[in-house]
Length: 209
Image 1 (cartoon, rainbow, N blue to C red):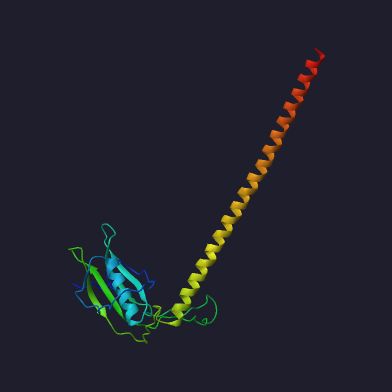
Image 2 (cartoon, rainbow, N blue to C red; image 1 turned 90 degrees about the horizontal axis):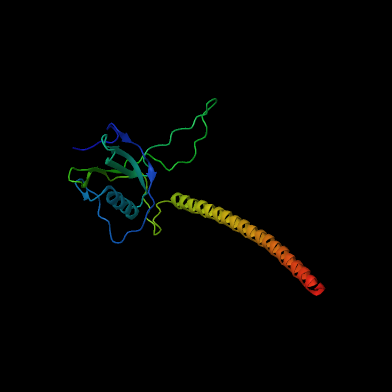
């Protein structure tokens, strides 16, 4: 029985775009009845297939068990699936919508976990309503590439901030060590001076005898 996640109760929308990783060898086209050992295996396969064909995968709805919360079915689709809603202000005219990558594409795949534990393709929609672009880098559009570059730049900035924080802590630690060392040296010098004074007094008394 085919599970329709758009109508099934308990389906949760978890739209997330999947980063594309290169895979060796040609990827066969999905078909209804195709089996996988796990949800992750099915997701990786469809992601590799998408890279080969020329689109980006969006992880979409899933249906979970009401008993133990396990994922029972998952829908994956093109990242251009659906439409972005128009943004309206609370008071006033409709705002100018931001650029969106969504174009109402219906390309999708639905996988369901069977009693055997295998994940089986129960639906596959192949056709896209937009051009597909295959590139050596694995990004289907310039926008996808720019978005990835932006993510990497943000991560680089975050790492720089972490390094700056660690550097500041290290300098603070070194300053504390230097201050404590100087204080310890002063204490030792006081002790040495006291010892010398005692030795001097002992010598004076010895001479008087």
